Image: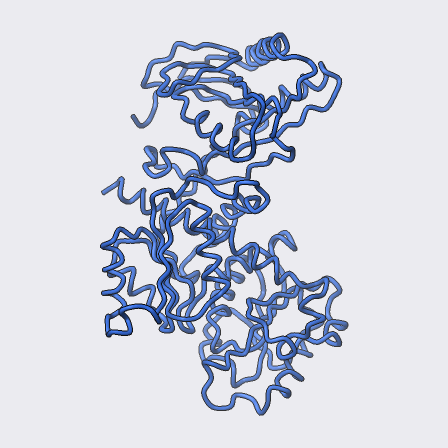
Length: 318
Length: 180
């Protein structure tokens, strides 16, 4: 076994904002150890045997939820699936009470997705189990951003000095926020691109550039991350029509011709083909969209492994 | 701290280990070498070069990371972070004659973990264990088939193997353990 001088001490993963570069790199390096798993004949290790992971999803999800379930199963943990629709939350139980009740059953790790930003942070203060944020409101989606930077590192070796564009609905996007923290911390230069109506007021406080025109910056980007328009979260009319949005901010074959030939195209999913990205681009040679999904598994295994490890260390000390 | 083996002695010890292996295995066996991260990996590569030369063919060589199979992973005794690294075995272990290589054989728990990890990859025809140093104090019914050096070491001492590829020096030292 290799031992490192670095010590991972966080038993929760709530956001990437508070993580140092060293911590981010440590997660990515740990995930690298899990990457070859999918190629094995037996895709399972006994590491979290006897541990219980609960997936508390108060919002819909396919990728993230299944990815966490699979990651936990591959580490031999038992997984409880919790959905809002079939739970006592509908009978008026509060989030903290629900979590405490699950904890009383011996849950070790709570993976939570919630519509309200800050819900995972609230849980950390209320329960002893490890808490992993699987997306909270407009706040953060740390494992998505981790798999994004992991996939970029895989494609380009490093993020240092890369020019990365994040395009679209920034204001409703927790993916964008986590992306910004991780990418800038790892040395990339981030430009947010979208109509002014979809830029959150907080951009001025972030270490990023802002552009209201994709055409103005497309030529200089090394990586482009296309976000989905989150119609379900939108009030009012941030742009006149989907067609107009698509005309100005969609990643089309024509725009790709003006981009660097080796530009890396990403999308956190689910894609709205023909809106923010054309099918030919999504399925084209520059796209690493499916690699992102595959890497999500390695990242989530690494995160579950690390938070559990940190929890064990604190238990030993106390 | 005392030096158990210096650079020259390590060289002779590896030679001795190699002779034992060569004397024991059939030259036509479907042999493959697997080293345990990270010092076992380096020793495996050194033995691999010698075996290739001796047998006149390429013997496949891989590396096993046992972190996820350790039985002490939930109760780390030392405050040191175990790092997960990839297992790199590019060949099919099924029906192979596997030579497992590690630096120090102590409690036997690493070897137990390695055998679990290995059987998850397939079903080797046979597994043999080669270690540079056997320091005794076993906690599991495990023994090595090929041993470079049998060392008498106090229970509160640890044997550390340093190899040039990783540590800029070839030496085996005995130190007082920090934690017990």
